Image (tube, rainbow, N blue to C red):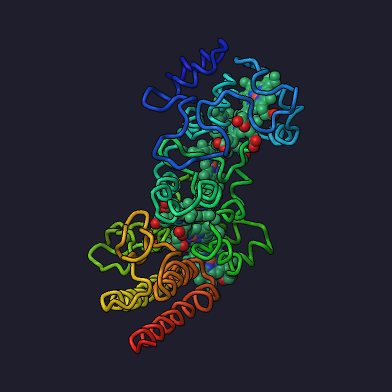
Amino acid sequence: MRAIAALLLLLGLGAVALALREGPSQPGPAAGPPPAAPPSGASGAGPGRTAPPPGAPPGGAGAAAVPRNLEGECATCHRDRQPGLLAQWDASAHAQAGVRCEDCHGSDHEAIFAERGRVPASRCAPCHERQTQEFLASAHGRAREGAVGNARLLAQVPAMQRRGCMGCHDMGRGDEGRCNGCHGAHRHSAADARRPEACGVCHMGPDHPHIEAWESSLHGLVYRATGDERQAPTCATCHMPRGTHDVSGGITIGRSGSGAVLEGEAMPIPMKRIRAETAAAEREAMLGRCLPCHTPRQARAALEDADEIKREADRLVLEARRLVEALHAEGLLDPPPEERPAHPTAGHALVLGGPMLYENQSEAERIFFDLAKFAHAITFKGAYHQSPDYTHWLGLARLKAGLEELKAEARRLRAGR
Ligand code: HEC
Ligand code: HEC
Ligand code: HEC
Ligand code: HEC
Ligand code: HEC
Ligand code: HEC
Ligand code: HEC
Ligand code: HEC
């Protein structure tokens, strides 16, 4: 198949070659996003559009003026139009290796407009099979799926869904996955992607402050001082060893979102489950990544302390959950779920954790959201990333204070004040 595709490309049949490379089971370039997906990518006309794109200069070479098959013509025309993009391209390994624009975009300009210039991971696969498979197998390959059906996404206007959620989550979903989250669309540089800042674009903020925790740890300090990954670890050192694109390796109960519990253990809010044997094997894999710089006992002790901190945080969230459930059973939530606008996926049921909204809720639930979505996550994510301040003051201290606030609210409600 690859040989035929290469031959077709040589013969100037780029679009046909691309379709062949992608295989029959995948949507062709002009198919547009799947119907279940939220409006993705840029705003504007929907799939199948052939009209001039927004921004085409008046009277200039709009979309209608662009000939359909442009094999080999791309850079000439686009160098004048987007000189910055071409500067990125000229500096890339792709340009030096003779990779061409149409290898990623195809050469049918109508199809390019119809897909709004998007380049799914399946276009990279023929040349980078291993990275694509690893990426699709990891949490990054599911990043889109995780957000698409989430109630907090459904509660947003479409532009906010596109920019506010999918801005970080439009990284994966089977063959719709995109590779430019870390690489930059035309530099496609491995060195750029290794920088912690490449991860920090998404791994930041109150529910997953990874870049902040790492920066404020001794790891961040020594890396800033030396810029040398042999002396201090970056995100890629621990999560993408030897260039693997499966970032889910080496993770146990400290998973994304609210983390996980071992199979058989109770979960205070929706979390993932992991078998004890799998967790033990993943832990050994992670410890192996610490050994160039630490002794096994120091590294193991640090991660076991983080496990203990995660379980303590889970226990506090469980206590908070029981309290809110009791208030609900006593009819004290104001307004009660039955009298509020329906939750997008749970209707009038009480939702705590998981797809919980941060709007249309009682004061008790607002306090719960803050401690379960933010303080709980900050505590254990800070601990796994060796940041004392995120672990304690910005994490656990807020979690405990939130629980006290919730208790005070319960006393107030029960006293009818
Ligand atoms: C005759 C000039 C011309 C040629 C040749 C040309 N393009 Fe374009 N291309 C345009 C114009 C005009 C636009 C609209 C954006 C703009 O005004 O720059 C565009 C837009 C695009 C976009 C963005 C689409 C979007 O919806 O934002 C991509 C990707 C693209 N071209 C790739 C290519 C590729 C790949 C080739 C070669 C196969 C190519 N172009 C050849 C003129 C050209
Ligand atoms: C290795 C793959 C690859 C190659 C080769 C490539 N591009 Fe792109 N291009 C991308 C990706 C990825 C995007 C971003 C699309 C997305 O967000 O899905 C993009 C986007 C674009 C856009 C829209 C930019 C914007 O932000 O408005 C234009 C125009 C474009 N490419 C032109 C070109 C031209 C011209 C060439 C050849 C000089 C080229 N591309 C070569 C991967 C590639
Ligand atoms: C037609 C084949 C082809 C396609 C399609 C292709 N690449 Fe490449 N890529 C190459 C070649 C050739 C090199 C340079 C040789 C090497 O280092 O392996 C390269 C190198 C790279 C590098 C390393 C650059 C560096 O800094 O050393 C990255 C990252 C990369 N490609 C990402 C992508 C992504 C992401 C896509 C899809 C959007 C893609 N490539 C599409 C052929 C391709
Ligand atoms: C474009 C946004 C984006 C960028 C950039 C990004 N990530 Fe992620 N990452 C995500 C999202 C979204 C998830 C959660 C996916 C899910 O669980 O549904 C995630 C999950 C993860 C996980 C959790 C894996 C698991 O199984 O629990 C790790 C580890 C991770 N990313 C590491 C990295 C590293 C390292 C980098 C930089 C090299 C990086 N990410 C760059 C968006 C991003
Ligand atoms: C989470 C961020 C992230 C995403 C998403 C990502 N990459 Fe990478 N990529 C990296 C990092 C970091 C490196 C550098 C690895 C190293 O040198 O250890 C890299 C390196 C590469 C290389 C160079 C390989 C080498 O060993 O030199 C290729 C090729 C590549 N990526 C392709 C892809 C493709 C294809 C996709 C989408 C399927 C993709 N990448 C998505 C972070 C990412
Ligand atoms: C010194 C190694 C190390 C470095 C550096 C590191 N991580 Fe982690 N990361 C871990 C460990 C250990 C876990 C939890 C493993 C477990 O579940 O047992 C983890 C977990 C994660 C998770 C899952 C949620 C969580 O926090 O528990 C994400 C996402 C993540 N890391 C992203 C990043 C990003 C982004 C960076 C860089 C800013 C980074 N990590 C730097 C070791 C590291
Ligand atoms: C700044 C980037 C960013 C924005 C904006 C963002 N997310 Fe995330 N989201 C992430 C990252 C990174 C992770 C995984 C890291 C972690 O949780 O430790 C994640 C995790 C998640 C998870 C948990 C997945 C799991 O593995 O359990 C869900 C669900 C989610 N996001 C939905 C959304 C929704 C819905 C929106 C919009 C209302 C949104 N996100 C906005 C970056 C973002
Ligand atoms: C590339 C080298 C490197 C790797 C890999 C590395 N570290 Fe570190 N670590 C350092 C440096 C440098 C410091 C700064 C303090 C020092 O020199 O001991 C440090 C400090 C720490 C500290 C704080 C020690 C203290 O005295 O408070 C902990 C905990 C830690 N690392 C855990 C880990 C764990 C767990 C891993 C693997 C998941 C890991 N480190 C991987 C280099 C590394």
